[in-house]
Length: 428
Image (cartoon, rainbow, N blue to C red; front, side, top):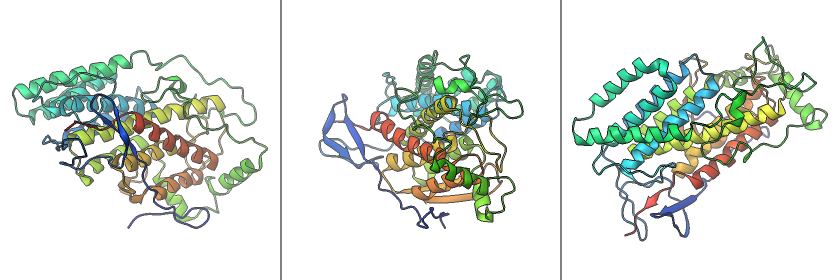
């Protein structure tokens, strides 16, 4: 049974109708009146004036496997901060997407115009692309990554197709690495706002985590401010007073007002979202029976959009530097406004709805904070409401920070899916 939480007025949020996005024909010309509700086309589906789009025969499991390897490698790297891992995961997924699409076609590549030799293995290309990006950015894990690389390639029959796939995957990875060479990562930027009323202050001597992230060049959108949230509420406003009272009542460590169900929801969404949501995306490959091209597209579209959403969030955190309340869970080392977790969640929810043109997420999430606990969401509205509420009940965010971040995810994802990852249909 789906887990659903009622909204403030007592109504369960309704499943929304999915957006519709543009379909591009070969050569980049927009089809006349081409707003079609297709998302991922079913294998063999044809459209007026186009040839059918066959499903790939290559196993998509390798795309999921290297997503899991990437997430585990980055999460286990003590030299990076958790929010950085989101960015590097996006680099991996961009390279895998270009590697697979360069073999399979069907979708517009990401700033990469090479095509693999006919007959090259998309599986080998995906393995090579992911491996090369990871060893570049996490050299300390090279031995483990090399072992995984050898094991994955051992499952692919030897021959020309495999060799060509490996070579092309390395080219796809090199392209992404070059694109990101001077993107502003690790710039010497520090959070230095004076400790005035309303300004965030480091706790336990910990400085702001990765303050440079808000100034990194995004992967897809034009800038960190293209989908910037509105300024946070004035400390003297009625709405801020209401938000503050809510967090004080429900989000403090020893709250007497928070119910057991609210505490359960708060704890469920208090772990590592990169690990939590990527595991759910891997499940989507099986649930939706995606082929290798559609799997690579899903991971790239959502992973890269999430990275851009977090860049936007971090920029706003740095600029506004809003303080926090003493919460149920450990206070994280960065300002309060807006919510990174809500931006991540919203981008995933809206991304799945838009990519698959469905109101039904079929999304199973496993908590990384409460071992063995799962929740299933069929409706995006219920998931969005749960995470907004959860971050309030944790005491981590005021409600306005959650809803602002939710809107960033929705707006940014709508834009990225209209401008990237578009189907290409051959003329008949």
